[in-house]
Image (cartoon, chains in turn blue, green):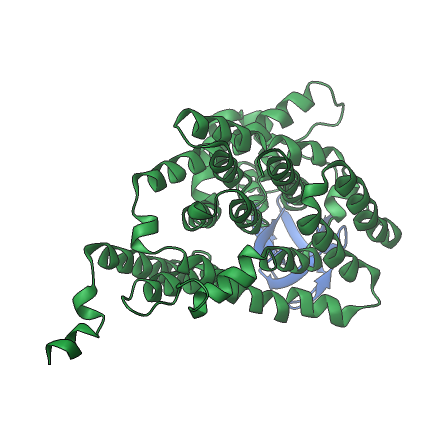
Length: 70
Length: 368
């Protein structure tokens, strides 16, 4: 299991995956907006999306868990 | 009939006016289609256009409408400090407080200011003119305007436009320099997540900063005092109305007056001179050296600090906020999509604003 966390506070503007999806390392999981800049949060390793802990429009803080990958 | 024709501007148009119209249209075009600093280039472009209409006398001393904007807004040094009030209300110094090392990067990235200063002297500019040209390297529009109005008002149009042009070109100018001066391994350096900064620290920061900097460089006080006042509005949490007004309505009003006043200084006779080309060249030199100095300083710091700094955040020491920090983020993510440098780069970025104001204060104190 690996938690994908927010690298900084920001707003979730898109969730690119669904629970159960298979992802490869560096695939986009979440698009986070901070300082009026969109940044993809990518998968740290290949695996399956176990849980998504945020939704489009959420404001998240630094280190908040966004996605859990198994 | 002939007399009536002579009262129109048409017969008084010069080639210079037409060239300036083209420049005005170019600015407005770039602002609308390319989104290059639109909040400034639209009013600046329009100011250029109308000041190059013969017989309108918009910049006639004591009479013209735009002269009044320029005189009471810029010559009286009202507008740039008010812009800084708004900037202060929009700036989060948290990343810099969390990692004070980045203050060194912000200071180091002012190197280009001094390179361009000496370069301009070699090209034959007078000391006050060289100061105004050098400050372009800080990539800070209001500070450039403030310094130029103080020291070399005849260069205002050129230095202001150069500063804003280069700021909008940050994503084009900086990446090649960043690539040239860093190795692949350095670009992938991951920095530890910044520690949270308490409210108390954020409130104390503007108070301590204004005391320290204004005591050391008193000439920076008009800009620094309002910059820190705006930040205190933001961080203290009890004057949200003032903070919102400074960051939004007031900022927008003074931006309109600033843009049109700067544009109005760009009449054909004032702007179409060989000197202006040198201002643009030296401005670019300043900008490039500031970028390079920030990167090299970060590499130098890595020789001594156990916790390594990604040199890509050094270039954010030029004060184009937040564009330069965004460029650091984009460059870092290009080489490792799991690397997030944005907030780390905001440290030198906001420190760079303070650094440029201090550099301007030193210039004004010495050459004013």
